[in-house]
Length: 331
Image (cartoon, rainbow, N blue to C red):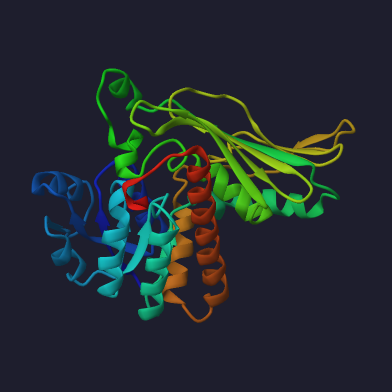
């Protein structure tokens, strides 16, 4: 069944997802929500077909759509997702999905009350073929000694911050900052590959607004540590690595996954990845559509994905607490 798609938010990542949705062959854009009609119409006009533009969220969520993609500021995700679930609309929420464990548990309770509705956090990289290659290679390694995952790039909004402005993407009032934006990518990878850590610590570089511009997180497991390096106020060109004994998996970028290599530590290194997709959101769009259209057949996979999102949210909340970063939803 072709899914009728609605979107909340009209930024670049929303456009990328809608393009991926069409490329997957599983969706058709039907509704756009924006606070300003002109902005919503300009977005809708970029795509073929009849697309309704709404400035009232309830009207959009009762317009007959099957699934809504939520890419508004992080602090708005919870309320918008809750309204969608109550209206029987599946939700795809950009990461990080919810501000803390309290919000996540309330959404989980709503999902239990509305068992036909499915929730997905849009962690695109874990659905890509090159991430599966990493999982397969880890399974063949005799021992894991540790890992370092890096995702740090200068934000297009950091100049505005330096000029005295308070961009949403760097402002804890909007449940935003380095950890809950770029940090989610390496954190998702770590928990997907290695499970929940025994403990976690976050060493944040703080901004004047109390948020974080960059930071280093340490996830402590029984036999090794995983170091996460991420941020929005500098550019890093370090590769990510998963250490065995002699052998090592080398990853060009833990979020983009352009290239993955395996070095056996004995003189042999080979590229084990395939070509990265031009639009990295196509695979997740396909996965989500399959789970919506075939709920019985994909029940186990969906529950695993839901548990993964819950674990990521749990560790995100703990890391923020460790660094003393407070969001309005925490109060």
